[in-house]
Amino acid sequence: MARYVVTRLASLCLSLVVASLVIFAVIEVIPGDPAAFMLGLNAEPEAVAALREELGLTGSVAERYLSWVGGMLTGDFGTSYTYRVPVADLVAARLAVSLPLTLYALVLSTAIAIPVGMIAAAGRGRAADIAVMGTTQLGIAVPNFWFAMILVLIFAINLRIFSAGGFPGWEAGFWPAMKALTLPAIALALPQASILARVTRSSVLETLGQDYIRTARAKGLSRRQAVIRHALRNAMIPVMTIIGLQFSFLLAGAIIIENVFFLPGLGRLIFQGITQRDLVVVESVVMLLVFSVIVVTFLVDIAYAAIDPRLRRRG
Image (cartoon, rainbow, N blue to C red):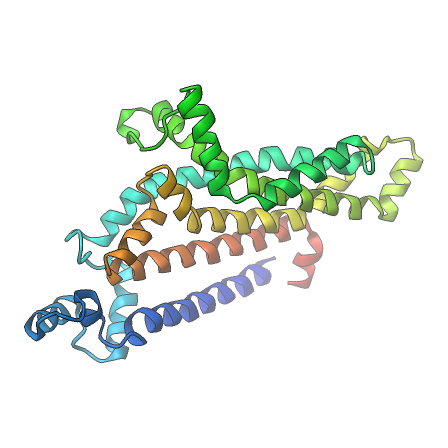
């Protein structure tokens, strides 16, 4: 197990190095002069030179890269050109919205998908299975922003149970903040729950075809009992892969939902950074999101080893 963890840690570190090189090259090297890009075509040479000095662009490419990486390792992401505040403060404030939203949506998605997938697998070919497959196909086909607009129309405009957008802040209280995140979380969760339910169904059905399941059935267990007691744990390995990918997607891909509901999250911060040509913000937030994706993948790999002892022996 220890060797397996060390191997995965080495892979994680290598992935982070490669990702940082790619992000740095795309944002700071390939466009040419980042300062000239941020100020626009009509900027005065003196203003460009002053901004280059402010952003630390006077050194070589290697010095700039090492300075950027060193700053991130110490929590210094630089200063936003637009907002004139440290990027770390911007990220912390926006993460306080995006992270709870992501976790909320992930919990909803998992709570819906796994029981539904198991029910469909246990009743394969029956009415429940057909209904689940049809509903999940619709959930996959419809984009989440359409779900968001329908939810706003029903629950905010017609029923007036939730607000149509905005975020009151955590200082307003836990329940008001969670209430503001409920519709966005549902809009994010429904398409992901559809994918996860189909994967759960397929994985459980594949596991039900194994010899040990047939033995359990021969000993008198019903199909549902065999699913819950024996098939579920082995079927969770591909399901966990999807859950890990969904967390990364929800955290990094909520830009549309955050704009639909006017939520001050990371997705909207990236959007604002791109439109305002604030490369410092874009570079730092994108690297943070890549870091979260890689770390979640690492944690999923460790969870594999905890569930499947064969991986520990291979490690």
